[in-house]
Length: 199
Image (cartoon, rainbow, N blue to C red; front, side, top):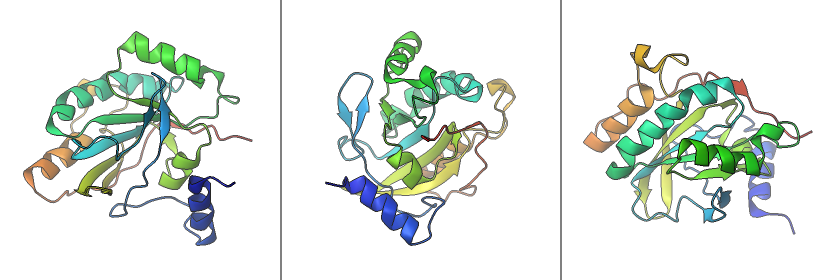
């Protein structure tokens, strides 16, 4: 039996939409394994007004450089209804440092208080169109089962030095959502390592 997510990916490809979801599209829900062994979905958190969905990993230097900023985003915005959900998209055979066991170890070392999920089949990553780690999708809840993508791209404009960043794209986007304002910058280029796809 073909998994529903696989069918969605095939439909996406057959329609010629090979580069993933866009700003304004409805976000695809998923059910992925967290490092604590539990399954996590977007619909599973009824208190969420939206999400900071970040495709990231253990091994990319850019992702490592952003880890503290990702933690800070969760600490700042989870109480306001926009928690971080991190998804590890790399194929563990091609990138052994991104295995589930290594994910568990890294989450414990850094004290992640947000879900860190394994996209083992890479179906979620392909459907969203994530290309790099880290790659962010800001989602906003429009109804009980509908989340809309409001921003796609980088966390900020300085991948090396958080203090030197003068454009904090994700923070600005969420602040505008909370205030009921429109988001001026809805898409930026995600800077980071390319995703390691399964052969």
